[in-house]
Image 1 (tube, rainbow, N blue to C red):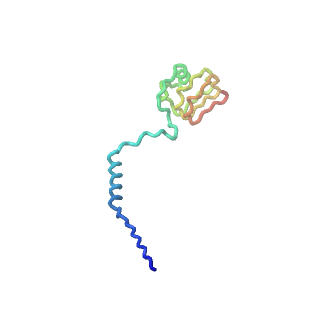
Image 2: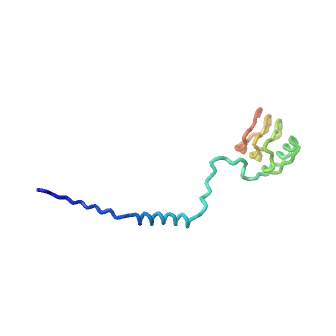
Image 3: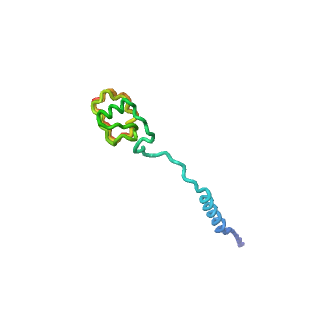
Length: 125
């Protein structure tokens, strides 16, 4: 007894469907050419984004120490030396300064705004 099993597997040729699918993807990306959504920054910004006005008292102290009057956080220099300013309390506008020396500024209670400061000196505070 000879049993002949003929298995015929038909493979439909699929280059055309593959090609269509590829074209579809291309058209889809071309038609929806929108800029990518703004992703949150991984690294903190170099300077504080919002321009903060400097309080009158703080401005007067900075002027007394440096001889310059800075009206907003944007005007501040990269390096600020405010050693021994016991009357300095409000440092909320100084977050854009790169190097900030507040040694012996015993009146400061809140430094939460200084997170962007690169080098912060608080000796004797």
